[in-house]
Image 1 (cartoon, each protein chain N blue to C red):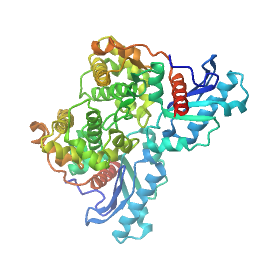
Image 2: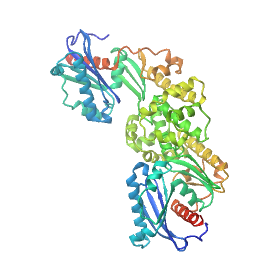
Image 3: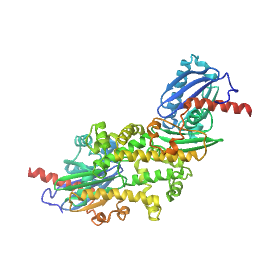
Image 4: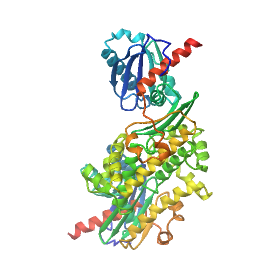
Length: 301
Length: 301
């Protein structure tokens, strides 16, 4: 646990904003969690105003849940972990936002996820859901790996697995690659018997649509389908290499979070999976620790 | 050459409409090419009204070039080869268009490219430019392979090569994959020294932006870079398999067209490259042959 000396009776709000939803938690180091709220997409890269709206909606819902009057928003110390703010331009725009909080402390959602997973202590995290990326904090040094986005990065993620499955099926249905059980599965899923039918369904779809197909890949791999198995093995191999790279920085702990963390586990390099520890707290709590630490540093300096 | 008995003194217009431009040629089987015109994007999948505008613009320019009055558009027999009309819905919408021609005969741009390449005779074509696909006509049977679109299909195309290069560079710059000369090249191209900088430049870019990077991959492969070489070899291997599959239908000729046909040639399976013959006529002429044949069939039936 972090030191609780500073701001002991202060109210904090921790906000975790990602591409599909925004979670807010109101917390006091004396009384614990007072309320939570859930808003919509909050990645400013995919809609700046929308992100601010989602942040405010989740804030208001958390305040309602905590039985707080709306004007007490001005008393909250806010920690924000937002997707997209690794881009300096977006970081600057958010910090220039005329926010309603007493003070606001901004960092990336990866950073707050890592702080939360290790309850404020040093450590590393790998996030595998729709996308994939890795992050570590050791002795004040941070490392950020992957997370380059669909379709050029995020290997081993749900979107990557879905895309690889579609590619393999289309090539196989053309008679240009080995047969796979995934062909039958995707034809059933899309209610079409042709390669062009599948291609049409997926044309221009976002990463989330591909990520929905990932479970089929794991299922087929479990049932011994060679093509699905190769996809999962390749994806897991990348995640293992990402983990080993992060472990080079000697983080005291390594956690894997996101929807693919559990299904990927058994496919990882045993040297990696043996080291994976559960995340202790969610990213919203990481955002609160981040704000609390920033305030402590302000008081010290 | 095709039989010229039918419609000998008729005026034809052949239109080749693709994702970036639309070419029109006015032709008489007595006098040859009378005029040509160039319009904008004409893939109805990416803009239906825009496609019709591009078709009409290229038509008007070709008529002007031929010294024809605008009202003679009603005397033209039109052959149209359009991207996107392999989708039945778009095919129907275009045929329902209140067009100004005497008669209009519609098929895919692949079909007219194949007819043009073999001057109206049976044969097969592989098109490799921004995308990739294969087509053959033998004894009235057509086969259509690949062309499933970026990023899920079109292996061996310019866009595919560019994407594979970006993926390899991002992974290499993270220290998770072998070093490649392409890293230096892309850093120079995008004027950035970081993986995230490259990722930002390419985020959400269309296939054409990736295709622009293909020349770097060929250059680096020629200079012996292993990563670039593997990309080119994999892409060429797919194109070779596509060709061999088309050759199973025993087409009298096989042509390769598009911007990547020449650089790919030396990387193909020798059994394939030995069989590649030059395209005799461009797709616009294929569209004219298509219309002429349709009229002949009308008269016979």
